[in-house]
Image (cartoon, helix red, strand yellow):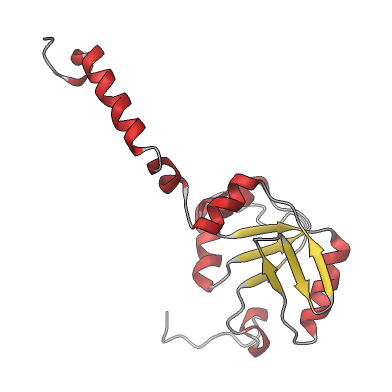
Length: 156
């Protein structure tokens, strides 16, 4: 609600974090957030990436389905990023070369290539399926011809 005053005690309302698109988190981030609404809330807040040492499995998969990049880095790297950001500095995540950059520090991460490609192309599950639209249509036509009674059609 836009008319409601932001809670000044809420960490993310600190002016240092205004407009942040990367969220730093701790172990098992997203635990208890098995619905896509958790990722939607983060994405609606403006986050495009979450960095943590580990993620809850369902949350992790929902991130990819909704265009949010979950980056797994070891605890020491996450600690270093927290310290770097506490000084008011910014970090950058580069999905093309799978790195997180914080000043002179660089941290590499791994990600499944198909998921990386889909995020870079902005393709979700439906978009990935629609890439096979002609094949799907051909299959449906074949099934209709083979089993017309299933589709409420009269046998020819």
